[in-house]
Length: 72
Image 1 (cartoon, rainbow, N blue to C red):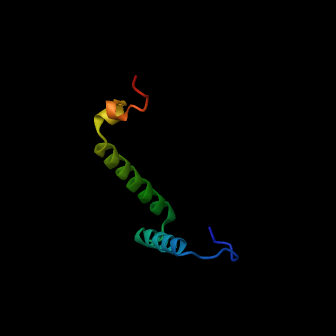
Image 2: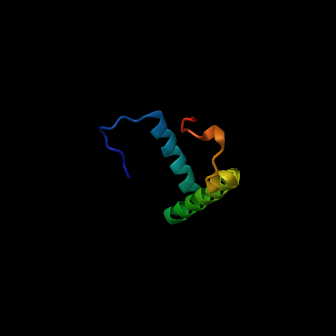
Image 3: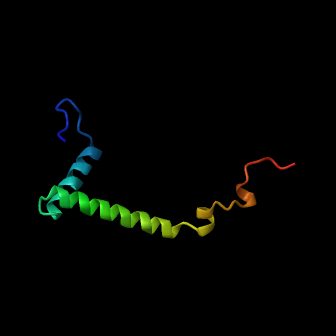
C-alpha cells in the first residue's frame, strides 16, 4: 500500500519500508512467498517463546508473592 503524499515520513516508517523491500527481495520479488516466509518465521518465534515460559505460568499456578488479595 502506498503512503499518502501528505503523510510525513518518519524514521520508523522508513526502517519498516526498507525491511519490507529486503523481505520481498529475499523471496525474489514473489509477494506470496514473502508472506509465507513471514508467517513461518512468526510461528517459529511463537513456538520459541512458548518454550521459554514456565509450565507453572502456562497452567496458571499462582504463588503467594503474586497474590494481590490483602491478607487478614
